View (cartoon, rainbow, N blue to C red):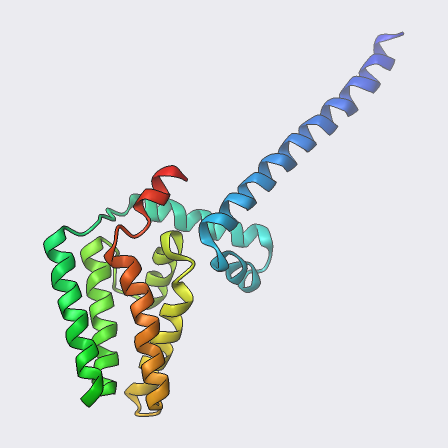
Length: 185
């Protein structure tokens, strides 16, 4: 067999092998992003120009998150936040709109205490999505109702729902907040 014939066979085979290896790597990365971000993966894909652009965005979020100093709360701080949440829940009986606003402030304070930047709601969503993608929809729903209640447009049932949604994220942030998951991921 001549060298030209051999090269004509080897080069295409090598290209195919490289393409297969690249596909496997990309599929593994996609699966890892899906597992890490949960429902936030599909939400980001749906809002992006392409799946690749969405995956780049999620990777960017991971890199930013890795630079943050996210830390678990000391026991004393967890106890204080738990008492503060109990106070907000009791407030709901007499002043539901105020309680929802206070729940929003308390969750934001807890984020800050854990090490999340809290200047922008949109950035909060992105930063939280890395560790808390499965509870992020709770935060979105609660925040939307909180915004409605600012204009006195939320029903009592919506306000109650907001408290439930805030509680879901609050509870997750109060505990280690996924640090153990992140260490094994």
